Length: 357
Image (cartoon, rainbow, N blue to C red; front, top):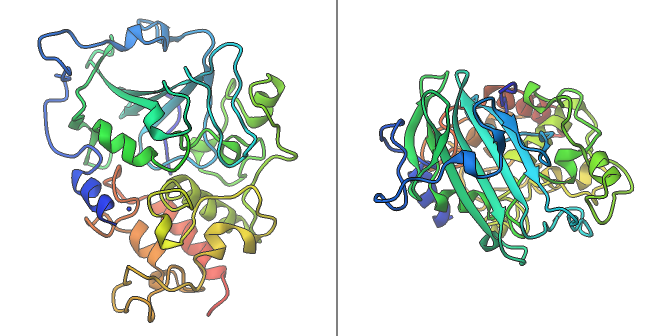
């Protein structure tokens, strides 16, 4: 617990109202899918070799994304288990395909205490969200173990440092967030694991001893097609690199050509084929581009409402939406109750450097 994360139409509205696990219940009484049977325990899942001492089991790889998802100030730890003798198919560097049996673990802590651990496991061969199972475990107050929660999740599971509460999401909410197109893993990918780390990245993006990078995966023979070079966001300035990285990590899972917001034509997911700042999707599809479905306050759709209006962050939809936690307006539409003010600041700094229309 050493890192602090600083950092879809009608379907969006449904999930946004759900709040990615909103509501209220007793955080110390995790629910079981079958109330008459004891809940599955985290200690039996292969994450810990000794849960009493919090010793991670052999064979798991720790990792940290270059541009983490903002989760209201939580501290996160992440691990992956790749089945022995298998490799990740990286023939499409932007769309990795994982072998059956791959397991991801992500642990959330608030105010110095473990609250939940999520496990995502690939159980089918197709590169699809339907090939993955999603489980969430809620930690006991003494952190002796964690119990599987029901598919409905646990609203208001723990307080955050902002005076809000953290929600353990329902399974369907997890699937909504991971339905990016292709395999259902959002951040274990080329850009996020690049050894070319963003030099002004947020503290939670810094590598700790033992964290694997793309170079490590290549060296260990765990990917099929190594990249010619370490991926990075291309920008003429440091704030642009960090801003477009934030949009990739926090918004690009929906806003990409295969994601649930593909029909909008606004692409915020980095492409490893980009060879200049102008080719970066988050630049190419936003700068001085009119909004087709959202009106910045005081403007009209398709008339004078812009995704990004160069030089003017306060008149840009991206600024307005990431700076809001109002239902129907905030972006991302769920999984956060607190604005990431640091992200707003550096995105605004980037927008001020962009050419005016």
